[in-house]
Structure formats: C-alpha cells, structure tokens
Amino acid sequence: MPSRLRPTSSVAAEAILVGDPGRALLLAQELLEQPKMSNHARGLWGYTGRTPAGSELTVQSTGMGGPSAAVVLGDLAELGVRRAIRIGTCTALDPELAPGQLLVVGEAHAWSGGGAGEPMLPDPGLTAALGDRLGEEARTAAVASLDTLHGAGAPAPVSAGDAADMQTASLFARGSALGVALAAVLIVAESAGNESLEDEAAESAAKRAGKAVLDVI
Image (cartoon, rainbow, N blue to C red; front, side, top):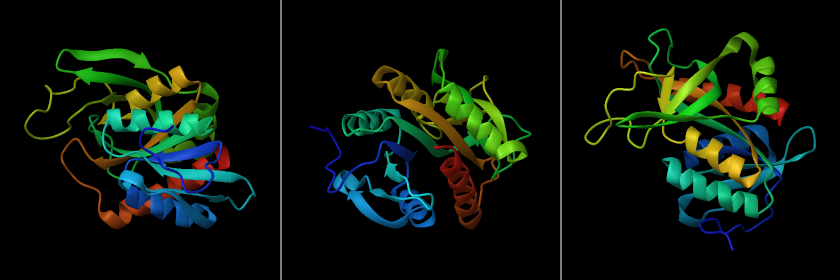
C-alpha cells in the first residue's frame, strides 16, 4: 500500500514530477487532454491524462524537500511508474545564470555542512534526449541539493555546483534504487545576486520545460 498517495484513478508508467501542487495543475492543464485528478491526499495533487500524441502521462506533485519527494517516488514506483522527469526550481550559484534559464541536470550532490556527497546521476538516455530537445534553451548543470536553502539552519555556503535545490539528489538516488529512470530540468528561480523570477515568467518557463519533456518522455 502506498505511504502517501491514495490514487483515485490509474497512474501512468511515465510521469512528470514537480514540487508545487499549483505547478502540477498548471502543467496538467497545459500538457494533457482532459486531465483527471489521480491524487489529492496530503495536498500532493496529481493528474493523469492523455498527451496530444495519445500516450498516458501522470503529473504528480512531490511536496517540499528530498524526504517527501523520495517517499512519493516510492509510491509511484509501487503504482507502476517506470520513467519520470522532474521539473523544478533552483537557486543559481553560478553568477552567469539568469532567472528563467533552464538547466538539464547532469549530476546532483546531497550537500551538508561538511560538503558535497557522492554524485547522484540521472538516466543517461533521458538526460541526453532532454539536452538535444532543448538545445540552446538550456545548459547542462551540476546541482547541490540541500535540506534548507535560506534562513536559519541553512548550511554553510555551497561552493560546488552551478545551482542549488532541495530534492534532485534524493530523487536520483531513490530512482536508482527503485529501477525508475529519472532525469531533471530545473528553472533558475533566483540568481546568485538574489534577483528573483516573476510568477508569470516562472509559469512560462515551466510550460517551456513541460513541452520539452513531453517530446522526450
């Protein structure tokens, strides 16, 4: 029995994973024909429907942080998901990265106060296909995944990687253990100079990423 998800309809073998339930709804409406809510338990909204090409796809929110995302991925694997791509947000560490830029994750490290852990790698086929599809719209990046990005309790400044987020490393590690092929494309939501992405621009970037994922998955 899944730990967190309580699906009310079928879940597809392929999925898009997002942290934010609102982004799950946005992408379901943008990418699927007549999407149906497949989960609302614990506020982890999920939707399943057919793509314009006729294949089944699930768009599932994972909540905030690596532990929540790992549990949700475990549930999805139990429900039959075999390939998934994360569409998430990140904070730039590289000062050349601008808000709204798309990053295809080439490796992710679980970051702690002591530094970066071993690299967690995505599925090479999905990652290469994402890179080919996005072309000059995106660059390949190394990501540090932290438990806390801002404020009290945040670890020492990250010195490795192009960007920081809160769950990609956990998803790659969990996907490898479960036999689920995982890849990730991230939207730079905040620059290294603390310039933030406006909501409308964030939605536009998520849609661009979603359409690219639709061609790949």
